[in-house]
Structures are given as C-alpha cells and as structure tokens.
Length: 432
Image (cartoon, rainbow, N blue to C red; front, side):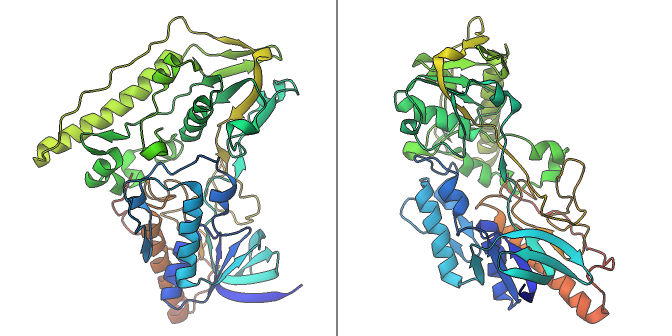
C-alpha cells in the first residue's frame, strides 16, 4: 500500500473544505483536500430538479470569491450552485483529489492516519469538512407501507414525473418537505402533507427580503451560545420559504384552499391506514407566530433606527383546519416522500471526540484532540456556519488556530498527540 505524509489533510471538498484550502494555500501550508466524489457533489445529487437556494445570491460569499452576477437578490438553481463552486476551485487551484474517499481516520504515534482510496496518508493536522448531513433518515414507519407504495427520501426525489401516478404523501415540513410538496402541487399532483413543527418566515417584508433585514440587524452575527441551549438550537428545523420563481412565501394554508390535504404529524401506519396526530392547527399557528415574531423584530429595528420603509399589512390566515383528519387510507397513496432529514455518520472517525449522541464536541471547530478540527457543521458557530453565508469566517478562524498550533509545535517541541492544550477564544458575533 502506498504511503505519504502531508501537513494538513482536509476531508471534504465542498464549500467548507474549499474555504479551508483557500486560507491554507494563502499561507503556504502543505495540505491536501480529499473529496470522495466531485466538487459540488451534494448540490448535484441530493437536490430535486426545481431546487434553488433559499438564501439570496448576495449571501454566496467564500474566501476571496463571491457572487458577482446581475441578480444579487435572486436565488441560484442547483446547477448554478455547482458552477459557482467549480469556478471557485478553478480560481485558486486547491490541491484537490476528487474521487478519493477517506474510509478511516485514527491517530497513531505523533500523527493522524487516514486510510484513503489512494493508500495510507499521515497528517500532522486534520480538518473534517464533511458537513452534518450524511445519511438519509428513514423512520421505521416506512417498513409498514405495502411494497406497491414507492418510497423515496427527499434526497432521492427529482420531480413529479419520477413518481407513479396517484396521490403522494409527503412527510415533513422543513424546507425540503414544503418545497417538494409545492413542486408536486404545481405539477397537478394530489398531495397529502404531514405537517410538523417547523417554523416559517416571510420571504419579504416592508420592501426587502427578510434575510436582508435580519443580516442588517446583526441577527446572523449571533453565536450559537448566545441562545442559551446550543444543543437545542442545533437541532432546530430551518424556517420554510422558497427562492423559486424569484422567491416567495410558502403558505400551507393557501395550498389547502387549492386542494392540498393537510394533516398533523404522522403517528402510525398499520398497512391499511396512515394515522396522524391532532396537532395540525397547533403546528400551523406556531409556524405563523414565528413568522409574525420576525416581523415584530424588524418593525422594532426600523423604528429605532429611524429607517423609512413602506408599511405592510400583516398576514391573515386564509384557511383554518376544522375537525382534524387523523386517518388516510393507504390504498389512496401511490408514493411517499420522506422529508425527514439526515443522520450524522462519523463511524469512520476512530478518535474519541464525540458526545453520547454522536455529535463532535468542539469549541468553534476545535476539538479536545490536538490537531483535529471540524468545519462546516450546522450552527458550528453561527447560523451561517454550514452555509455560504458564514463558512468563510469559521475557516479563517480555524486557519489561525492551525497556524498557532504549528508554531507552538516548532517553538516548544510539543507533540500533537501528547496533550497539547488548545486555546479558546471568545465567540465572535455571527449570523443566524
């Protein structure tokens, strides 16, 4: 088996790994970026045909590179995101090895050992930039549907035509679930939607995109630790809205007036009937309350800052559930789309830096194992940590940490794995 040594191994060639490489290349640090597929793989293969970003183009900013097109307030489609990343990589020529998977990471002696598709690699430092969405989460309830019912995870859904004719049940109302339900609805399919507790937000308010207001207000500069319970924040579903058609609200109540069937959470499947909870009205009300709360905060900011902004009439529900429908005959369903998220999968990492739920313990990406770092985790430091909006700031922070650790090793002659203390720094303000 071939063997080589690098100063820093970056695992993952998406926006996080490329951002890390940009800083390492700028400092002249010996490193390699391992990407098991191709640059932009997650945006190529896990998105449906009509997918587009929910965040506006002006938030697409990576180290040394940002969106420069003629539609900053628009929303890139999936293929455009791939092109954006490809151009970024071509612009600074990172030491990228595509098609090379890292199947094991462990520490041995004074280095880390990586088993890759190209052989064994040792490294002084390792940055894991594989994100937090690895394995589609399919609930055990899926096993209870008859075999004739086609079941796909949201990451496998492509378009309405890829599913058999008939009614479709969509389970989950995070961003993916709501957008896929809309995609099916616009294609003329009869959709049954199991509505969960995900919040929503208005696409625009008082003359601007809501995200533009929140960024100006400094909301996206808030550290995860400013919210009290960091673990709870990291588990929250994202607010649903869409960038489709230039960007608009997703109003499930409006869909209901147009024929979409709404239910509470999916509770059980017995082979004959899908059973739902009686929480539909509560879930819709809570989602609306979050959206209106965001508007309240924007109103307060506008007033305090003395900003001239057009007034806007508040949202009024166009539909209210009656007696909840808690049962749906499965014979009416031809397909199920599970928009139920992803599980983390770090089983290939043989370094004890995880908590009891398998989440990497870290301080803004710095783990308790000297020389091992994470980058691009959802809410790693801010709302933007796992997104184009904030990953650059986290990458710059880690690049400084790596540099300090290397200098300490040289000046103090301290082994990476002999218990080198890690420095901690006050959380910077970030975007949420």
